[in-house]
Image (tube, rainbow, N blue to C red; front, side, top):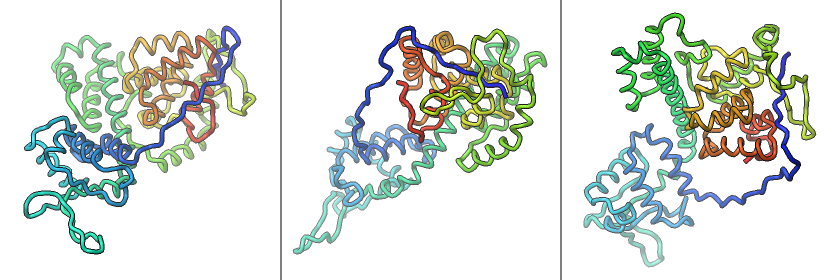
Length: 382
């Protein structure tokens, strides 16, 4: 089996330990809000709905989360918390949140929000906006948010491939189909609609410019954890056949990277990697391919097509390619695609990797494992 070793030695010795940044305790209110924000497409919510929910949550003390979750504030106070939106808009957004089951409204005869207690201080009746449905939905929201994240990555990836088709085919760009494709890029289309569009584009491309199988997303689909395990089992059963094709896993002779077999560093982490191992770990990227990449050229092509989908600027990719090398840059991008839900700013992360490679050196394979296997206790790279 052919492996590559991508380890960039630092120009000068120095302290390679990164400072531990203390993390603030998570506030369950904002965690739930973030999950709903990521899932707003699923619930057909708008930004104003999220803003109103943020205002409601800000009026509920964090100590009341999971117990007394009723907000009694008037519409005037709530409007002020929601950046001064009009009361008519506020009522519409509250009705929408109640309609999708995020909040529960109990109106009093007078229209005011209050609570009545008896002589034993026990609650008799409550009129207000109850946020307990949101608290109960959090486990479900975590699954929905993850699915929406994968859908978002797929949609951005297909749009990136459509832009690539338009850029590299002048005849297509000047056609009616090309004009419709450009307009579609500005619209919010589903993954299925985008797949149909890129299928139509590929059918109208000349044979000599037809896309490679590794970037064909016509059969791309969402993969759950169980799906990934099934695919991993199937691929393991065919690993010997894949690795026996020497031509598909051979590293170009002009590459200055060192090939080793089963090399490990002092922490026991693999410092080399094969194409099969790379794509087995990059499950999100693999789900966007109709057939797995079989050469490192396929891997780099796939990574470059997915880079814009997660917000990486071409200049940042070019800088990483220059500093990390072609394969190191590809591993960084595929790792960021896999860790997209955990990293708030992928471009800043890639820039930090590039800077670290320049200042202190970087083991790109170890970095890749840290991004694709977050459960392992591995070194933080930024």
